[in-house]
Length: 442
Image (cartoon, helix red, strand yellow):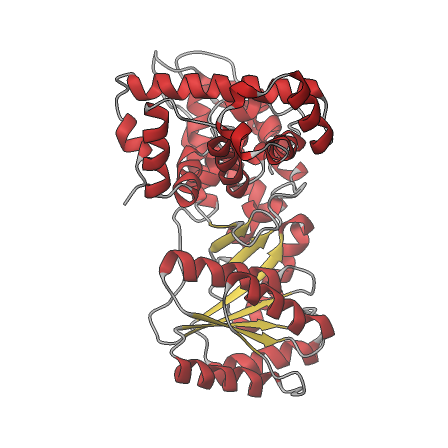
């Protein structure tokens, strides 16, 4: 995500020369390169021009402190402008009413159905809500079944009327059902539609008028770039939606939609989809996204993800086992599972300040984690607890059973031993803030 833009901006900042002050002369080439980088990232031309003009206005004549270089000062200015461009602050959704009604809109294939499931899971697990999913797509035969499968996965009920071809009635009946069952959030998945399809656009406008949703979210595929912005304009003119959802931000996207859509449509980006798993959904934080674009990482999001996966009881149990030098392969396996739930390794490294750039050209193969799991699963319970008993014949059996080589088994055992030693050192050392880090933020 944003890899090409990040690289180009990094090069642009290195062009900035001079000392003492930033002037029109020493900043010209940098601003030209920044604008080019934005255009290559599929940012709207007017947005790119306004952005660089604003950066220039903020930078001109700024005194450069002795502790920083002109390029470092420019990074700070660009960071602030990027944050402002993407909205400046995080905007949540309106859940004041009971039930709160959320209407999903967007093109077919933008990811509305999957996102509806992700949002339901987030509201249930993180906000303590009792959501109801509504299958309002009457045109795509598999849409109802897809939503039912997602609902079953996340433990959220799905309201559907397979024989009813009236989306307004379905939505209204679903809200009645929610009131009867006590559901406090109704998420209505609608059919995908083209902005030029007058009949379909009229239909969703009628649904809006009938159910009076608290929130209308426009779901856009980030990989469509500038097209997502143009489509958002058309939908907004008909629906006046409250926020934007960008899906597939984990893909090979240039990032133009994320940088343009807030400025062009004047509606906040509220959520982003960052993967295929049902928990791959994040609130959109403009300042954190600016950090990522500029290669500064996003340690706050990384810690939040870790806190979601590592519960208090498990952390305390692991802490005690490490202190007693009882960390074994079962514990190592549990850590692998929790890491995988946090996201893919490449994305996680991009959240660590400094590390993202260092490994951007490194092929991080997640197969290593799958191999480690297979190796541990091929061990007996006794071998997992006491890896010291793993002689040559046992290691050969494990390698054969896991479809790996003996060298892979040996390497994993060395990694586990090194991890055990490192964790033991961390528990015995007097590290400031160590205990606070081990506990989940309350």
